[in-house]
Length: 303
Image (cartoon, rainbow, N blue to C red; front, side, top):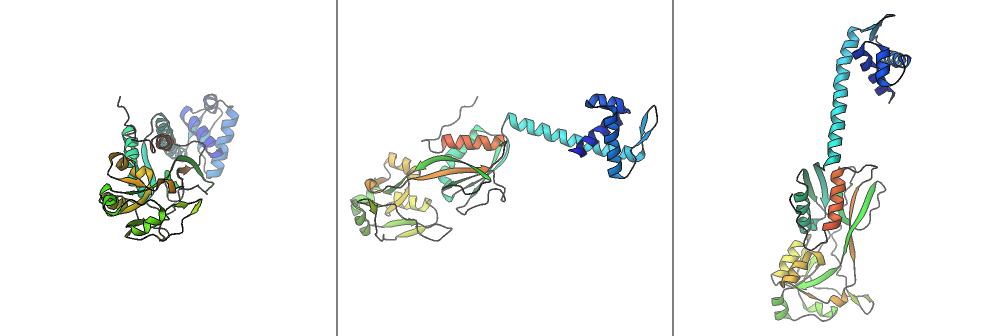
């Protein structure tokens, strides 16, 4: 801050050729301007002004330094103008990390892009635990709670699972009526990429977990293959409700064993903590909190 004050005093004095006039424009005394310039000269090790009782003139070193300082001040003014413009309308690149099931969130993301066409969205799909700060993400959507004090968090919504199959499959193989019936069916599973373990189907029986080893007809590291296999009649899959809601409404999938599913998960959005959240991040957080679990995502009006 002292350096910037010294530069301001020097530039004003260089423009007005007077410590008195410079002080008047800066709202300080001529003595204060003179002392600020003297400290600057001492730090730089050169004389910036020739001084007389009536006037001051720039030395050759002072002229060189003035030209460079003008460029610095112009850059600062341009940066301030840029920031002022971003406060008026969200714009710029927005780097977002989504889980691998994030493709199923694309309707909400596309609605955001329509609403904010001046924001360039850079999407990264992974289930690994990213470092939001060190890897330069503006926002991250994940299940579970944040454990990083450097981050802000907001719950986007909760979700439960459904065990689903196509009507043709159920007609051919029968509808399971209890969790134990799943042992006679083709079951398609999700494997967590981070651990290599199969995701547990959240089954309950008489108040406790069901200790049953389910058949494994296929394993995939993302949910989309399971959704495809279930729709095409290859068997049962256990998927988050928001990923199959449209298929259930259209009748291409049927939900079974609803009374035996008791879990509830939650998605959170995380972003770097700051006193002044950038407009693009604030817009994305607010939009996704309102839109992600809406059915279907609203299409913004175009004015």
